[in-house]
Length: 253
Figure (cartoon, rainbow, N blue to C red):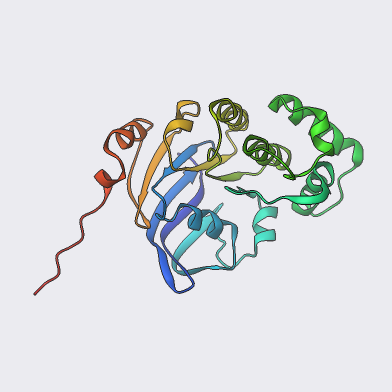
């Protein structure tokens, strides 16, 4: 039996009084890659921020269990320390902070203790090589003047260095040209592991040409309306999201 790493059960989430997630349910097992696909406004980013504990997103009912434990009340730093990672759709620039200092501080925060310089350098060097990124990248300021592809490669580098057990990737493919998409997809594939679950949130099927998910979920109007294998993404490409909308129940007279 696969080990349930993340269980989202009948989750309802509101933002500033408006309900966005309306009973979302899904399970991600260790060792699996799940693709969550949905149109704009369906609740994809709401789920990602909610999983990471953003205070703006209010869970009104339902459960979020990680490694068998309810985490709705945990603050973001404790979720990160427990092994949850979020790659942002729109990473923020931090002028004046080098990637090297940023990554070491992030690793220290996750581990709860300082990281010896020698160990940190070796870890980073190994991951830079695996991802095909130049060593000079570490001296640049975080996302300052970065192209879309560079920003997304930095997100994958963070995942590679932090080695989370659950990685939530929020539209990592957005804004990428085909070459950058292939590079980012290769980086994600390199991080697949029997111990790690990956929730890949995307709007388009194109990244799934390079990453073969174990499970595909279709999210429409705040609910997962269908789950299946990789073939579901191709069906979605053919039908469009309208073909997966659940008709509204008629109002009784």
